[in-house]
Image 1 (tube, rainbow, N blue to C red):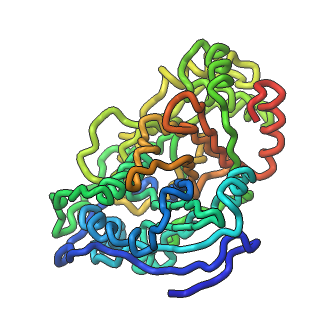
Image 2: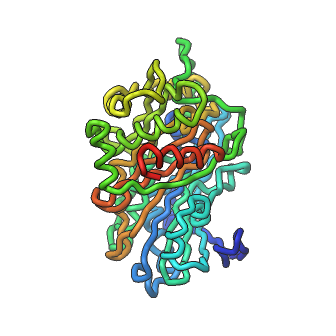
Image 3: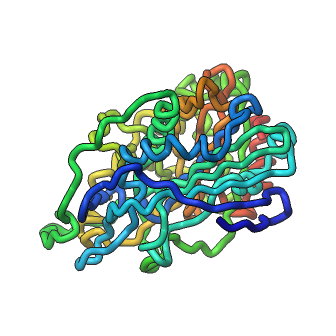
Length: 426
């Protein structure tokens, strides 16, 4: 183990270790990400789960690690490392190298930390590591355990989006709670023993135009993060149930996600030059049942308009978001397949992107009868058009919504002013 100090002295006494599956996965076992998975490879999900002091009272780091060995028997692919086939297509070699575990301490109480309401500082509670530049040594997931001065705990999950969407990540995390409670996951099935997609030489005969929801970036090679020309900043606002009801009444009760997204879409249009953004990307839970343990199956679509957004009726924008999404998943799949899975593209932030976490069981994680008091998710690797996540503020609707925004740094204060002036929500 090694120890070091983090910036600003808030997080300190950092220690690193690894945990892997309790049993050997097998010889030459590989897991092949789909085309949709590879479309998301430059993005990362960062989840933070806050618990009060009673939840982990008298719990040691060994007590936390012990159930993970059984957990990872089931999610074996999350403990592998990326390789490239001769075609260049990435795949995971399931070699049981393990997940990285980070232990840390914070010199603030949990109450003091939450009162700071600083999205930048919140990133100290979860690893910001990305895959590469040495893929063979980069874990796809990292878990951080941060103990506050009062005994409260933050558990941070860093999840490479190439493994799966937010719905896969939360399901993965919730299974750990079940294992702690005595659940014995079944042995995973359909272990792949040879490469199929990676060695395919099939070429699409038709010319496939790139969908509006992706943007090609300069080759990243084995360092899976795209570069922006401006600094991106993260901030969150809490929209109470009362204010949420007010927004919905002004947007014809289209739904919490649609109402919040319409308001922010218009507000951002008023701080940017021009009539747009006239194309936005919408990401939300897909209706089909997921066949595999992990994977990217969320809906990714676009909404297009041909008129100025700043003068539009918010209720019309909300209606478009709810009913007029053009699903682009098949086009994304074809665009990645066209180049045999070696494309480097960005999805979040190609257009202004709205991500609905409705349907993600954020508060389903249970540690020996204790639920998280607060949960937040962030996204790294967002393009310059920005991304907005809308997630529940608590385990039930009476607590409203948390809206987390990743935008160019110079837009943050302008947007806060606009949201306060027109909607009183920032």
